[in-house]
Length: 201
Image 1 (cartoon, rainbow, N blue to C red):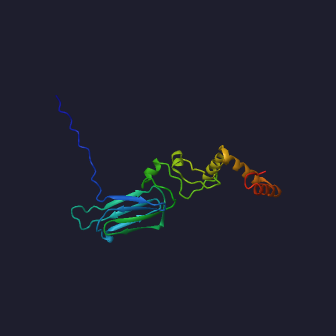
Image 2: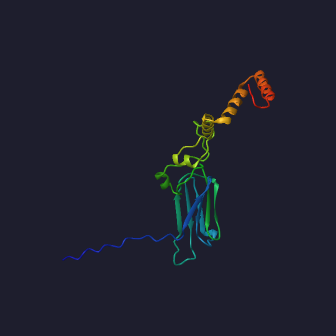
Image 3: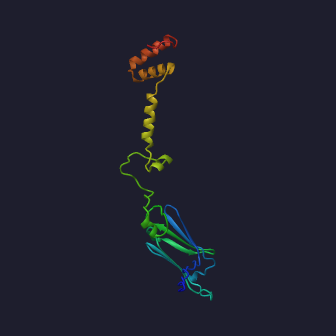
């Protein structure tokens, strides 16, 4: 029987020398490369409108002299003149000013191609003339709540509720008094005062 052909072991790439992480605010994205005690002369941070490249050389490391390179095509555009990188004692920090105030689902452009970009944070819907504010119910339904309309609906509902007994009678008199002319109001007041508060005609 022929010997089985040997299957080569899969090639596993070495993990990167430094880990990196990122976080964001509505206006900025911050990228951190966790490289400790890097001489600023050995670090190069290049920021472009749609890309950032971080290079760290290790001339004093005979075991691993190869440079560390992190090259990221960004999820969104950045304003180069308002962005900066700095070499700190525990990390390299790159603060990038976003061109648009949108939520990035990831830092890479590959994620942008696979995802739908979130609506800008400072948007206004031309069809909405009244202010609308977010609510958890609206978030589930993916549409804003028009609080003015909701208040009008509740007011109409309150007015349509049936009152009973004295409350209904008082509401009736208030409505009549509120819609009456000045002469009718005087007559109602006189009737009420003369009867000691027992008759209103």
